[in-house]
Length: 174
Length: 291
Ligand SMILES: Cc1ncc(C[n+]2csc(CCOP(=O)(O)OP(=O)(O)O)c2C)c(N)n1
Ligand code: SF4
Image (cartoon, rainbow over all chains, first blue to last red; front, side, top):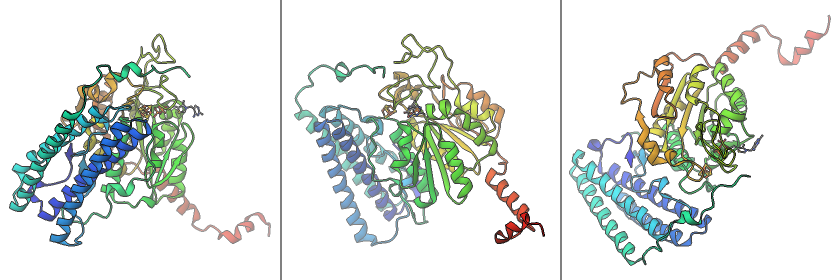
């Protein structure tokens, strides 16, 4: 989780909204990628969960976009996704072939925690009162998402108790 | 932040879905390339991306640049040809450690000594991924694979020392353990006016060893900037590069403070010189006709 070239102290409300939208877009895209990877590897349970996460992130992104449009119209973006790295998106390394739904949810949980930490850590450096209020709101939302994923995790039946390694053949000579 | 951003990372992402194994390090590499290109802001149609063959060599297809997933070990000759004939293009070459340092190893020296203005990115996973886990030139001694049941007897190639020894003007190392740092390094390499080499320790989650996964790499990684390394000092760079395999130094090993002219520049100068007083094309035959 990182950003590059973003000066939080100088962030305007429009830039902060654009940053938040780009963060949601990155997360949505990553969950869609993960869902696609799971489908490719015939792991429908994890794929379904990642698709749901993608839809949720897309919804958050659109809500932020509507807000931004209402306040600032079509003013061009000055924040670039070139400086946003896995803020709310699960790290690429989180995906594994044949993930169980529990593993998929645990990776989403870690991502929500990452995003929560990102807004928490950025807050002390923010000077603009409106940006501060927005970041506090986003931080609190991440805590809510964390709680939602935890609730989903609690509904899952216990894991069978063996690891997927037991089903994977060692690499064979070609 | 005040300038508008003409290009976002997603403008460089193609519709083709990567078929890499979930968790493969190459996902972070392509994501870093999207970001580096967005920061540079050249439109995709001004970029040519060439690769060889291997899992990592699929990478041009996942970008919106002109792409050529070419022949095993031949990314550099093709990239050099493209750069010479179309100097206005930003040219990237990429591939695996096998592609670059086994079958394609001979080409690196020549691209370097010509100082071709291109960026060469090697996704070094110390294994042949595509062909299912054979020894590669950067596999450690003793490594057990399907082609070395009793452990490899060969010492690995050191890609960093290799390119430094041939005189590359820009040499850096990155890893998905620090994706923001990786994007910054790729951007710097692309901006360097001459041959730039980036070795990326990109884990193979299917055939790689535990020590070469993100956690293992993090444990041995050290930032060159934090060590106070002076990237203008080639000998200091070579000294640090000797730790390849035991330490993961991240950052710029060497950046020539006074970049040499590129081969393209020299060729164009020579063409300009020789074309002075030369006959126009339509009178070329006159040279062969005795008056
Ligand atoms: C001329 C030729 N020889 C051998 C091969 C078989 N081959 C395909 S990819 C590859 C090596 C792949 O390893 P690497 O370049 O390290 O890339 P990775 O798949 O690990 O990303 C080999 C030997 C080939 N395609 N063409
Ligand atoms: S075999 Fe290894 S290098 Fe190839 S896609 Fe899978 S993880 Fe990546």
